[in-house]
Length: 258
Length: 259
Image 1 (tube, rainbow over the protein chains, first blue to last red):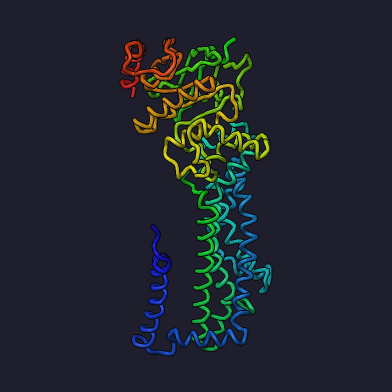
Image 2 (image 1 turned 90 degrees about the vertical axis):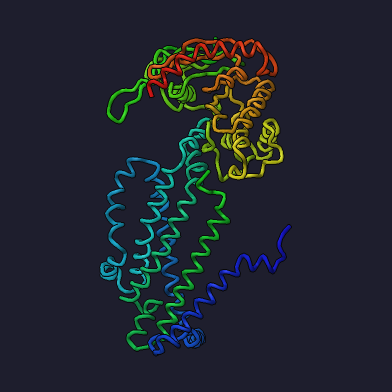
């Protein structure tokens, strides 16, 4: 017997909605009754400011600028990272040669690379995309390589005994078995991309959510700062949900357990 | 000519301390086409090492393994393998897609391989479960998929590495009956590894008993002249059980003393 539809929707999303509403209630109470300062505007004011910024197109411009950079860098970083990770996980010599690069570079945070990126690529799109690629690629490589080495040897042996060639084993066994690890790496990389893009835009950019934060500080537009912060939170939340959803539905059966 | 012959096979491993560990030595046995050969031995005696070499996953250090007169140099479609655990199944493929895997690798058309896979799912008693994923199936059902996946490929022999050891007692005895039925239906040559005397006498047409490791070898081979379904309470069955027990008792004691 299935629960009535209203009940089902409530069970699935009710707690979530409640959590979100409470977040804004707490914010409102803290702002109005606890702090009571223009430096910490309540959600109603931020929302009003947000509407204004949406109407005049400024918010969308900043949002799109950041999203575009993240998307371009993230896709390029993943497309580079996945094959490198597969190669490192599959072939020992490749891993030996490339490990110094990954093990050395992954400890230099992307934020530390901002200055170099700006010197090399200027304050335009080039430096931002470079930084997002930089922050994406190592996590994707490491997770992909870990996924390949986590494949149960019996999966490979079974394929050999069933007559599969080396190429077929790579394509039909190693690759699908690694999908959940790749997606997890990409999901983590997406989180890092947000940190990186804001930091990069804070330092040098003509538009973007980070630039909006910086301008807010320069011109004491506290409401603008909060609009930007809320946008970052919502955008990140939405993208992460999308990832979780795709891991769950598209690759739920790619569960690493079996 | 026997289907398979092991002659004077030795396999040693280099341990982490750098010393050589000789798992099996002077291992010789011949397997005829159509028989159900059980290799029985105490734990740690190198049974799985023997199977891995026959499958072609590992090479002997010395000696020779011949199949139809040709040396075994690597894994091949000629020898289907059923593993003990379920980690050889492809979790992203449904039951029928797992069974089809070998046929798909050979480039057999979709309709034909589906039809053949369904026939073997039927044979192993998994009709109606074909769309389920391995994670949704019980341990016994997963072993049935493995058996169907190996058999649909029409191997010259089936290698089974303690395939029912991880199952509960009831499921295990049910699976033994099922395997005996499948073997009678297909007459595929089977090389079956077990540490369970009862299992060996229930299934085997011949039983090879191994000595305790290291430097393990075949202690003796016993022919089981029982046809059709076997009854565990039958006197002849018990007679074979006792005979095998006498052969293996000392070896089990040795293997425990070693460990």
